[in-house]
Structures are given as structure tokens and as C-alpha cells.
Amino acid sequence: MNKKYKYWLLSLLMILIVLPALAQAGTLLWMLILQSLHLGGAVISALIAAATCILPVGYLWGRYMHLPDRFWPRYTPILIAIFYILLFWIMVMFISDGDFTHEAFVWMGIGTIPFVVSTFLAFFGGKMWIVLCVPLVTYTLFMVAFVSGAAGAGKSLGDYKAYRNSFGLFCALLLVVGYQGYHRENILIAEESEKTIHDYFALEDYRPFIDNNLLTPVTKPTLKIDKAWPRLDGATAAWPVYASAAQAIYQGLDADSANKYLKSSRTAEAWQRLIDGKVDLIFVAQPSAEQKKDAADKNLKLKQIPFSREAFVFVASQDNPVSNLSVEQIRNIYSGKINNWREVGGRDERIIPFQRPVNSGSQTVMLSKVMQGLEMRRPMQSEQVSGMGGLVRRVANYQNVTNALGYSFRYYASQMDKKEGLRLLSVDGVAPTLENIRNGSYPFTVDAYMVTIDPPSARTQALIDWFLGPQGQKLVEDVGYVPPKATKEQLSARGKSK
Image (tube, rainbow, N blue to C red; front, side, top):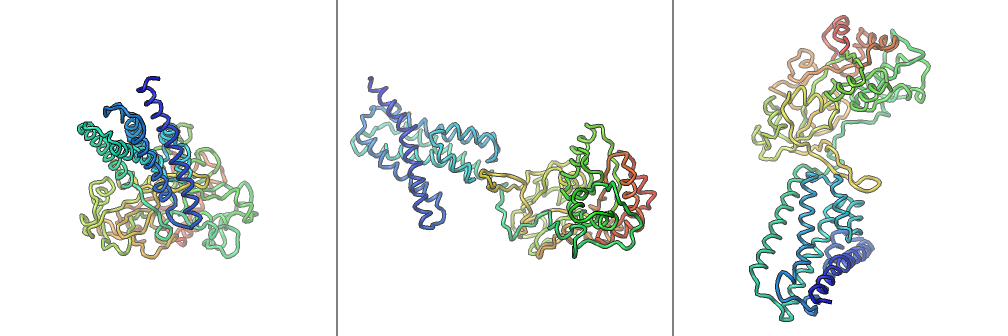
């Protein structure tokens, strides 16, 4: 066989079979050893340790292999492998915008099939950088040892320009990889349980028809429903209102049978269940454009009736000296024009502006009431390893750190999820107090709605009328919301079909 072709064949066998096998076998062996010794960082330590076994192989290859006497014929196979890995990773990161849950990383795994074991560890351990690091470190160390071995055997080449060009391209591609990694990490945040403030709470504490629940009692309800009970759903923050009403009005149900008629599946899910005909009445914030479109696509008429007033509030840590933001400052922060607390009178710290998921009640209000057409910056996100392996990526929950900023509804932030160290900010100098919500001076005062498909059933309409009457509005106030200033007749008129 021609020496040139023999060298290329042996090089391909080395690159595609021998080196991947050595690197991955070494990784697994060292992982077992390190884990048996209960040492932390076993995966990274194992990768480093396994990679070192490549060095003697590369040195022996360079020293004893019959090598071509020119740079490119000698080193092209291993350089192709190195640049292939780097370029493939860069392309995948560009396509996915750094989202490790994107399907492009499946193609990266297929494209690096010789490293199937390390790819498996990466996908199911949530350590996607392994997909790049194992083959890149393997081939790079082999190249370094290869050059060293050839030099030790007196086979070094004087083509310094080729060395310099190859090294320059390698460094340039590494810089691109580094920039992509920085860009990715800049929108990711690690969630810590002790600092996380979720937008949900223990529904079991507010479960109707059980002893010692936290629901608000209604004395001698003027409405009673003993059959064909309207099915209710809604936002988490509204659950204490409509669950309290159902406990007083729904006759003949107990804690178990009530589950069929009372849900709190959160705003986006509640809207979808209403549109799908699975519930009769929901208690939510205003619909998003997408939710309106979904209803229109099914030729459904929505009937929206405001039953309370609420403040859309901005929250920060009590350790943050900023206690007030203007509307313009809030818009500039969430559009990306302001990035440091120093620009709004605070410390010299980067602002971490948390958002909420698309179609959630708070995100819908943020877009329509606050941003009013301004494009929002990309949301902070979080990645966790799922129970079945692999990564799940989502909008990050609010972390109560000194440089964080978030938003929610006042009732939820101040009543249901009381967290020490959390501050509700004033907006344009006006605090989100009950009085300022009542008189409308707080800038981001919004209505909370009862929504049904028009026309509603007789019992659903009776429940809506009860909420708009004196007893229903007293319940709204007793729970901690602010009743609308409008009269029942005005509220009914505003509840016209939409």
C-alpha cells in the first residue's frame, strides 16, 4: 500500500477509534475511582485524568510512526479533527443561541458519534460542555504530544509559518467559543432554594371543605348552588377569593368531590381550559393577544367582568437602597437601556431583571400595561437536570439577591407569599398601598377579571352576579383585594361580550 495512504488510514483509525476509546474508558475508570473515594467534582476530575492517558499515545505516535516529511501531509488529519469539533460546536451554539435543550445539540452528538459515551454522560447529566471538551481536549493533547514526540526523534519540521497559522486559527476559534459561552452565561442564573420566590403557594392550605383551612368565611351566603356547580379555575393569587366563595355557596360537596369543580391551574392553563370548554368561569388577569386569538379562532365570545382592582408591583431586596423607580426607568431597565443600579440611584451593581413566562398573567400585564409596545430584553433563564435525565430550560424564578428586580401582583407579593427581605417599590413616588389602588394614583393599577364564554349558563351567571353584589364585593375586600369603585350596574355593562 502506498505509504501516504497507509499513513492516512492509520491516522483515521487513531482519530476515530483509538483516541475516543482511550479517552472515554479513562473517563469512566477515573469517575468510578473518584466517586468511590467520595471526592467532589468527579466528572471534571475524571475528564482531566483520562485526557492525560492521551499524552503518551501521542508522544509514541510522533516518535515511532513513519511520518510524512512535510507539515500539512503530517498534521492535516489531526488538525481536521480539532477544527471540525470547534466549528461544529460554534455552528450549533449559533443555531441554538446557547440553549442546551435545543435539538441542534442532538446533531452535535450524532456528529461526534465516536465519543458516544461522553455524549451520553453529557445529555443525561446536564453537562453539555462535555460534548465539546472531551473530543477537543483529546485531540489537542494528542497533537501537542505528537509534535513533541516527533521533535524528540529528530523529525521536527522547520515550517514555522504553518505552525503559526494553525495555532492562530485554533486560538481564534477558541475566542469565538469563549464569547458564545459568555453570552450564554450572561442570561442564565443558578437558582438557590433559599433565595427563590415562586409565584405559587401551598394550595392545600386554602383547600375548600377541609378543617382549619385559610379561606375567608362568608356569613349566611345569599346564593346557594346545590347541583350543576359551575367549574372554576384561575390564577394562583385569585384562588383564595373564588375558593372561599365556593366553600360558602356550593352545597352538597366535600373536599374530594369539589376537586372536579375547583381548580387553580394558574393563568395560562386556566385560559386554555376555558377555551377548551373544560371550565365555566375563570378568575384571571387580562388575556394576552395569543389567548384572544385562540378564542377567536374557535369562534368563541369572551365575557370579561372585572371583580376587583389590583396593583402590578415591582419588587427588590430590602438590602437594595433603591425604593422608587420611575415608569421610564422601569421601561429602560426591561428594554435593556439601563443595566446598572447606579443609573437609578443605587449601588454600582449589575441589575438582574427577572421576568415571567409567556402568557402568564403577570407577563401579559407587564407587556400591555408597562412596556406598551417596547420590546423587552431577553429574560433571565435557568437550566435544571430533569428527573428522567437531560436538561429543562425555563424562565428563571425570582432570586431575592441585592441586585435583583422582579414583578408580580401586590396581593400575591404582600399577602400570599410573604418573604422576609422583599420590598415593594414605589413607582413615580407612589407606593402600591390599598388606598393608592382605590384612588387610582398608583400608576400600574389593573383589574382582575371573571371570564366566561358568552352566553354563560344560568348558574354561572348567578355566581357572577353574586360576586358583583354587596356580599361578593365584601368577600373580595376581606380576602385582601380592592373592590372596583364601579357599581354593580356599571360592572355588568363593562362585562359585555368581547
